Image (cartoon, rainbow, N blue to C red; front, side):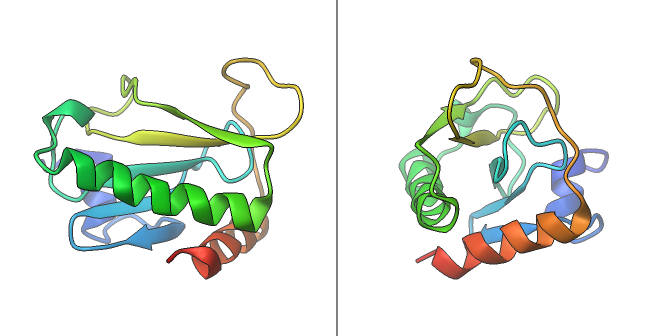
Length: 128
């Protein structure tokens, strides 16, 4: 889909902080993160909803790899997921590391590009 921002990220037309990639899926840091390490996992092919992805189990396996890397790299208390996907019409799983007391959905924050790059590298180092 031409105007889809996530499809443009997959094609490399828009830069991103990639933490994981395989033949089917791509994971990158959210540029308006709710927590440090907030990551989006998307299928490279355009689907509107997570449940429409034919490789559904592989999608969650890729998400688990990202989750395990986040747990090792950033040591949050736990990680949770959101799949509401209302802002961008491309299937995506939000992976949110949770630190201390937070509301259900913390406010978006701005993290400097240098720190985003550091987070990206920390997570990538632990992806298996």
